[in-house]
Figure 1 (tube, rainbow, N blue to C red):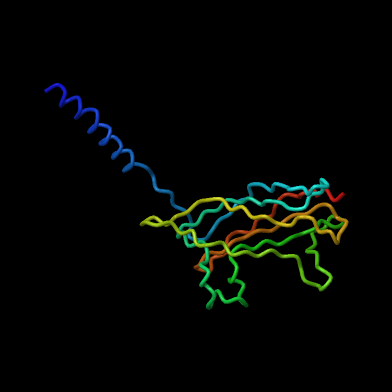
Figure 2: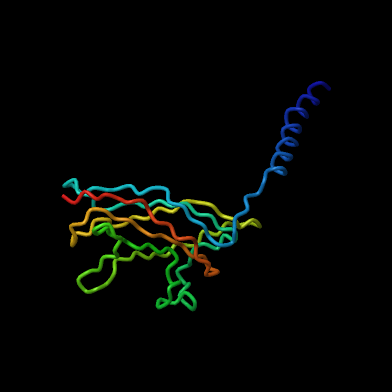
Length: 176
């Protein structure tokens, strides 16, 4: 008899305690509009020791969890000519004589990086989502002698809600 009560105590009590812990655990609730924060930019040097690329890291939250686009999301409002064809928006700036300027390529195209984050909506009833995004960027504008850059970053969800815009701190690039 004592063995049965020991088995009951060993298995049932932890199960009940676990149930109460899970029941009392607070569910994370975030606003429906995505929110992002800057985490870091890790520079990657080429074999000559020149900063060439960087990995930009941001964190995000979204209350509806409707972050990301499927490959087939190409019809309005996500058609290729729409701003919302992309959902990660990154603008490149050079600090020129104390002012942040969007540099342009020889064909007058501004240097802007736009990406499509894939669908990452959680399964289940609670769709709130929190996570980190990392994206590899070219950070060295070889057509320019300016060595200080920054990025503006924002994201959009499938409901067309655009997050806050964050500006990275100044990033000093080793040019040569």
